[in-house]
Length: 374
Ligand SMILES: NC(=O)c1ccc[n+]([C@@H]2O[C@H](COP(=O)([O-])OP(=O)(O)OC[C@H]3O[C@@H](n4cnc5c(N)ncnc54)[C@H](OP(=O)(O)O)[C@@H]3O)[C@@H](O)[C@H]2O)c1
Image 1 (cartoon, rainbow, N blue to C red):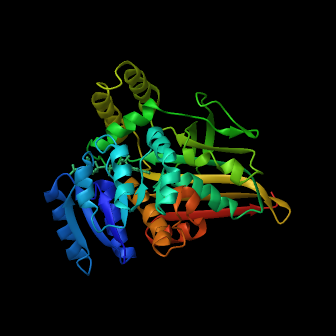
Image 2 (image 1 turned 30 degrees about the horizontal axis):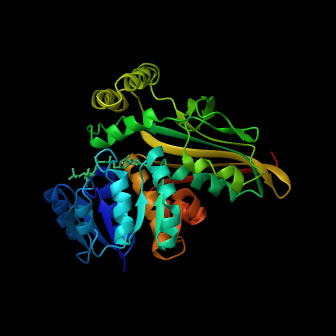
């Protein structure tokens, strides 16, 4: 039986991870955070909701290696669901290696990704399985491309687009928004076109038809590390990219530009006020439909004929759509089919067809459409 410590276990992502893990697996769960009372209250609630008294709470401050070392005693796997701004990635990653546990994170950060890369040899030599770039995005874009590729014999184009509209939820501002500001600072927008990557600084804009009640949206390119190896994995690919949908003109063309310029001028002092402005816009400006959706549209060949495949995943709760793919992947990790020593990105290690089935079972709306002979 595995024991999984969720760092930030009482946060939005952490508690959704805990609930799905308890309902889908036999794992024991440790909820860890700086405020023991908060983690303990949730542990008590979860033990009341699920059989087996499988949840405990521990105090842990990710900024202190000694505190993490103590919290990780007896754990097999560390799930990092605390924002990197208050949980320094170097300390967390080094602590996982020192404690001899496996590791999975859901954060987006070029610096964290590079740091993990520098330790890849050490991780593999230690026989540990470290999984990064897990969750919705990062996490699902590469998995969805591999899913649509599995429906074709030859894949030539795969465009993915995200629609992120949490406007109906009115979530309060939290530390994790500060982390989004760090993402703005290191924003990259390259896509793979005509067989090569465009420049990291270049932007690509395209119209993407999500269909249904979302319809056609202007979408802007956004780069995720998980996309980089895909052209090598599928040498027939001529075009691949991730695009994020427009939301509301004031947010897209005023607030976002103010945030980007403000972060250039005040890279540290600007984080909190600009984060608050951005979050206010996200929560208050966009109109319905309120949901989070990711779609992949691919074309290629099937049985020697031209074919198109369209796949989408969506949920009304963005935190659920972050936690469910992680837990669906972890079911493959826990049965050993997707646990391998080394450093991996979730979207590459997971078996995508089973991932989609498990996600659907856990409440994600999954759709797949194939048009052959087009
Ligand atoms: N991949 C994806 O698709 C995706 C989507 C959404 C979010 N995320 C990521 O998920 C992470 C969590 O986001 P969230 O919105 O769930 O955050 P949240 O609700 O603010 O919760 C964060 C939790 O982390 C704990 N925490 C903060 N600093 C800590 C520290 N130094 N040591 C130990 N625990 C600490 C907090 O508890 P205490 O205050 O008690 O310590 C809190 O329970 C963020 O990094 C976010 O970027 C990823």
